[in-house]
Amino acid sequence: MQDHSVPIDINSANPVQNKTRYFRLLARLGTFTLIRELSFRGNFLVKVIVEVLWLAILLAFYETVFARTSVVASWSKQDYMFFVGCFFALNGVIETLFLENCNEFSNLVRTGDLDFLLLKPIDEQFLITCRRVDWSVSPNIIMGFCIMGVSLWNKGWEFDALRVAMFGITFTCGVAIAYSFMLVLTSCSVWLVRNQSLMEMWWLFSSLARYPREIYQRGWAQSLDIVFTYILPILLVVNVPSRVMMKAMQPEMIAFILVATVVSLSLSRWFFLKALRSYRSASS
Amino acid sequence: MSVAIDPEPDDSYELQSPTRKGTWQKYYRVLRVSIAERMTYRADFLLGTFLRMLPMVTTILLWQAIYKGSGQEVLAGFKYREMIAYLLLVHISRMFSSMPGLAAGISREIREGTLKKYLIQPLDLLGYLISYRTAHKITYILMAALPYGIIFYICRHYFDGLPSAPICLAYVLSLLLSFLIGFYFEAAVGMVGFWFLEVTSILYIVITLNYFISGQMLPLDLLPPFWAGLLKVMPFQYMAYFPAVVFLGKVQGSELLWGLGLEAFWAIFFAWLARFLYRRGLRHYGAYGG
Image 1 (cartoon, rainbow over the protein chains, first blue to last red):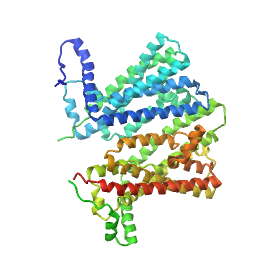
Image 2 (image 1 turned 135 degrees about the vertical axis):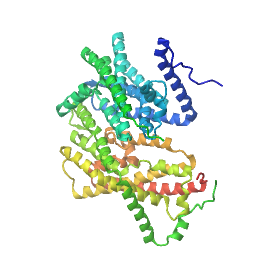
Image 3 (image 1 turned 90 degrees about the vertical axis):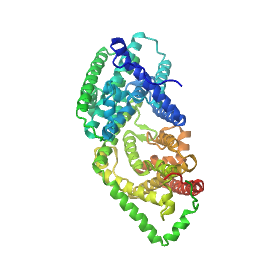
Image 4 (image 1 turned 90 degrees about the horizontal axis):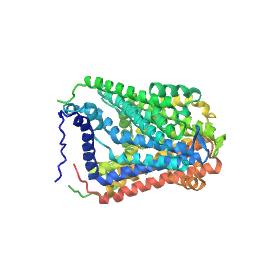
């Protein structure tokens, strides 16, 4: 029988091994959750079907909309579909890697099971937010990239290595910012114990990110644009990578998303550790 | 464990509860207890209702951009104001027709064997559940009146005021029938649990599809004529689209009467289907579990 134990020396003095052990551990955790998920293949398949169905509904909605108009907030159909694909892929990454783990955090706090995770000789933030991979939503990442690919094809996009590289960087920044927001909301569970409304807050944040920034740049919505671009930069998450590929590049926005990523990750980590210091074990 | 189950539970139940008045009193008590239970988490409920309505802000902005982009004032018979009013009214429709956890709850009772309490006590499953859900809806509507009232007041300029009394009457009727369709449809899905044990997967697919085909995302009139026509004879439109267009006065005269008639037909059909599946299902029921 294959041994699935983790042969990772956590106290390794080798700095290269130290740097890679988180990736190796993530790969092992991913393998473990995949094996567990495939024990219930029917359930796994249905969850994938639901995701495909949801994407089909989203595409049907935008097909219906673009049958009546050629442009939405200065985004043509192909540009907009790229945006939708980018959102779907990015949200897929977040849901695959972090959402289920963050959802589970309040239960760990309430039951006191968090103690067992804190005792492990590994970074707490890594273990709490990455210990399970939700493979059933991972096809969303592929589907998102497929929509982006089809949109580029339909637009007659010409390959541009700089744009692709910038897209890779800004997409990663988008994931990091979204992760930071989720981490802050999750950390609140230490004080609030119940996190149902917090997860609704996350859903609200993600619903802001799913539309082009231009829809917020009129009338009373301009204040939303300013707040959610420059103070709580959730509007950057999908907008910047999509613009990099489909519209004129804005170096200042690329620079800004890099700064916003560093600040978001640092602040969220500080907040998470502060929350952990307030944790009082609830179990016996 | 397997026990012999009477496939006609209603007959045995009638022996213990001979009068119709007694039956009503019993379900009235279920209603009162459920109302008290639902009123426990008021603050959480108010916060949740507000949070759920906030995405409406982005929806309004998106449709504003769509109308501006199209350069037209009317899309599929809907002006911009009517479109936003429609999307707000859909929330009211769903307030009546959505039944969170109903089908999953029925299938759980079947799977875990706890359904037998309805068979050994003088209590009908569907009768109990509709009393419970009615209580749920009454408290939900009463408590949502404040947040919804505020939101509709802020958005009042999207409406042309209240429609005429007959339209208001038809609107209320369509909402009540949408409650019955929503309840019996989900109950029928839950009854499938007698044969499949686990219906959550079917339910996920149904809920996801229903979101689009009931007109929650956009009015069905925007779809290509074939699909719009097809969806308008199906029962799902009554859970969101139909009550909203009734309020907006998009359906009037004989068309309104025909729509209400068809809605009543679907409500009766699903009530019959749920009862039929329940009786058939009891013949398969093994009452496993504690």
